[in-house]
Amino acid sequence: MGPMTSEPLSPLQLSLPAGEGRRVLVTGATGYVGGRLIPELLAAGFAVRATARNLEDLSQRPWAGSVETAQADLQEEEQVRAAMQDVHTVLYLVHSMGSGKDFIEREAAMARTVAQAAAEAGVHQIVFLGGLHPDKPLEELSDHMRSREQVSRILLSGEVPTLVFEAGVIIGSGSVSFEMIRHLAERLPVMPGPSWLANSIEPIAIRDILYYLAHACALQEPVNRTFDIGCGRPQSFATMLTEYAEVAGLSPRKVYALPIPAQRLSGFWIGIVTPIPRGIAMPLSASMAEDAVSEEHDIAGLIPDPLEGLTDFREACRRAIERQRSGAVDQTWDDDVLATMALDPAEPLPSDPEWAGNTVFTDVRERDGEASPEAVWEVVESIGGQNGWYSAPVLWRIRGLMDQVMGGYGLARGRRDARRLRVNDHVDWWRVEKVEPGRSVTLRAEMRAGGRAWLQFSVEGRDGGGSRLRQRAVFFPSGLAGRAYWRAIQPFHALVFPTMAKNILAAADAQAATKTAPDGIATDCRLV
Image (cartoon, rainbow, N blue to C red; front, side, top):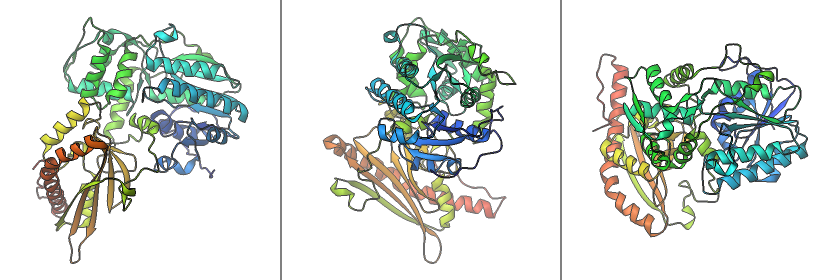
């Protein structure tokens, strides 16, 4: 456990409680809500202990040096017990995002582990962020909502008092709900859709979620009950789409709710049109099939509304759009997905010289250029997303669409930052596994393929000037299907990779020329 330094001001300019003298444990610190909450807790003066299954995932966060860290997989009882020592309040912000067929049972087991460990450690309060749902029997809820409600009941029945917040769709830059709304509204001027588009849903801004969570950590007495939270203005999902378009300055959108549920079909469609993969889009669309409206506002008697009032949907969208356009999105819904992924550390990685005896296919390309290594690295680091892949854009789009049809990300996910890469950033269907600034980057594929794949770029200077760009594709096939996939993709590599190297170097030359001659015109080499 390391020393901490608190931040002086609330990043979102929230009215925060006094947190001095209390240590809070943030589970799910690498996720969307947890990652956004920690800077606010630090600003309030709390001592913060952040957990992650892999501590390396915390090292790249801007607040990493200001918190204590503890390695804790919530399925491992000993790790959870150790993380809870000397903790006043536990923030339970972990959710499996519908990953895997057994996620309901897995989340229930984690909740029981947390409840028991908190009791043994003498924790005073647990705070859990759940979801708004209709008042109906557990078995009639969607899998997504059933899991949230089951966790809530387990925690509330434990020895440690638990304050449960039930919230609807969270609107904020990078939230899964906001990204779904944004992509649907921006890509579909006319949208016929399922009947659930007309259901009543009460949104809540991420800033209000963070406000409630921070204040829940500073309560004078522990509380054991559920509170509904929202903006107080329910609306249909259809109006969310049309109002987002108005706030974003788009042309008017037409949304039609057809008299068909089509939950599975709509989940599949969301997975195609938005960057949200089908494994998450399916449970989300199933949850949308139910009204999600707060039935009480008792929380105001415990935690007063923010001084400026609760944020309505339009204002939440305006703030989210402004934050995205400024490039200040440090946390996204994708962090929640990453937090639930378990990569066996014993599995071979492309950095292993012999790959532990595994069958491995590689495709290595090298090309020399006149631009400096710094100029080439600048292009390499900005690859993907809106900047493209510097070769055969039609083929990349086709491969991306194929991936989305199979339930993957495709090219819809883009990048977090258009110019800089950090470990665990997503770049379309890739994940940044390793970065050596100015020298190399390793991308791990998250596309649907018959095995595990990496794409590496490295840049080095040449004697006498210029640079050498090296591209290496590494593939570990899974059985015959994986071998067949590699053979089928080789013609694609033969067309794409040489052109990619050529165009990256040309783009570096053009950018260098533009910097030295401001009146010059740089050629866009991405699509050649």
